[in-house]
Image 1 (cartoon, rainbow, N blue to C red):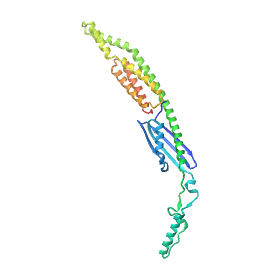
Image 2: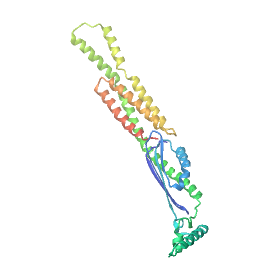
Image 3: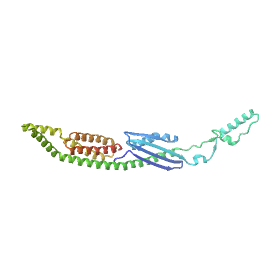
Length: 290
């Protein structure tokens, strides 16, 4: 299935430890390039996150952001734990300093509690939050890929429509080839007649054959048909095909240029121009395919 590289996904979950939010943004890129931002307490997950992204995404520049908001209990409204050894040491130090002072001011209990280390920081078990974050990332990736596939379907429909138009143009050019060659033959014979000279009929036929060979575009038309078949086959593959399609667009463009250079009538020239327009439209969209 065709996937676009441009997409956005956001997944949020409220856990017992706090709120987790993943935001994923991706745009087109030659390779997979991941830009990752996470809170410090989730940095241990960086390797797992990158491995998961590499496993599920083929190409694209991906911005992957995790936000975490702790619950109120973790925000300081839970039980206050006093670091008893630390506080006792602080009290002894205060008594010693007071003995050295003439008029010591009494230190209040609140001032002691404000001292660094007097209150024990409650340690949160981050393991459940880490697993919840990874599970939520997997869900966000599901949404991102679904968005990529939806956009990919629209791109695929456009490519198929352009390919049908190219096939029609190729058929029209091939159908007109005998008419074009007959017109060239008539023009050459008319020029010889205008010169009022006796031309060797055999020599005239040889010149006509040489001109026909130089202006022969059957090979280019056959290649265009072949590229159309290959595009249809590539679109059916269940893998990233953006690079393959980009290569085919270059081949399409090469054949249309050759067709234009060999053109000897306005209709064929117009057909070559129309081909280039259709190919460019496809190429612009192909740049965004994974």
